[in-house]
Image 1 (cartoon, rainbow, N blue to C red):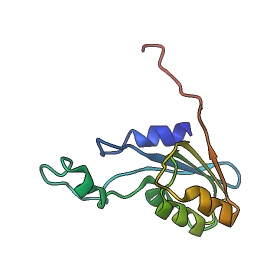
Image 2 (tube, one colour; image 1 turned 180 degrees about the vertical axis):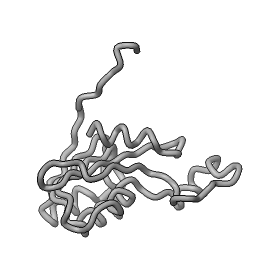
Image 3 (cartoon, one colour; image 1 turned 45 degrees about the vertical axis):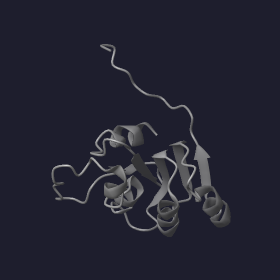
Length: 135
């Protein structure tokens, strides 16, 4: 979860920063990702002003994460926010067996999808965060 949190800090989105990380079957990190724009896209002036308008152009952290591995390679995914319905479907398609999240997303059908497909979906309310002794 800490890796997902650190990944979220890279998001360009000033309103919602989401991060995700994936582990393989040997518990090795195989990827970290965050929500953001497509690679190489340079948003025009004012792009971030209208949250509703720009939202459809944002690539979710889970989708970006899945682009880093092949189906069946990842066993665990940690996300800073519960996957939305579409991202939960994507994680299912990639064969993810365990998903951990920090913040709840009420508009998501992730719990129902996880139950239907036998995927462990668990909220993590606390996790270690390293703080600099200089803070």
